[in-house]
Image (cartoon, rainbow, N blue to C red; front, top):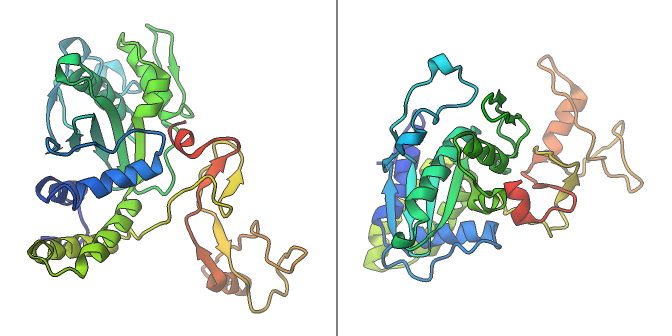
Length: 328
């Protein structure tokens, strides 16, 4: 079931993870997954009081209202190439009593801002209605980044409204502008609270924790579940989705850089011989020193390569807190 020597396709990866979540008891995958999201966004009220009526839907289809069908195109596509769109199909939807999570899963660093906009607008009409419990709506992006996406990377003017989308616009701002382009008014603050992100690397860590939790048990449930969890963990490892530590704004090891920065920063360990390398007053190598690696050989680069441990370090803007920075 989980043997993919050529690599796992995006839909297979999504189907394997959310398929386990759909068919296994909620306390095995669903609740730990919601706990993970809640830990990353402590200011959001995500964790359900009850999962008795929880539903996990894979690629459900939702009809687009007639007045939006001609407008649900990427705004940077020329008008002559646009076509009417009748349905959207998120990768997964998690329906709880208190809230609904609409999931867009990518097996890359991709951020399709237009898909997130369409899912938000249709999800708002589908779930945020009084006769359906007035659930809270969350749009959840999963990709392989180790930092939350910051901008939409789309350039598009709109002649009718006079609005212009810039590549540096944050995702919530993109959604708010696109909503105005189709004649809808959305609160950017509410969109910001609705937009969530998690990495497949976090899910890799979750798989490891779940296997450790259930692997030593002798119950009949564990005998059935553990092979599935083990297969899923092997698949995540094969794909390179190794565990990463959680991003915490109050962690003294976090690195603060200029606003809007997002990157992997190398953590440099002590070298046996630091001669020739820039050092600080304590003799440690300056973190700003990043050696070059050349195909034909570079002794200094080779020595540094043996001593640098590339570790994902959360990069936070000054003054931003963890939950709010993820959505800005």
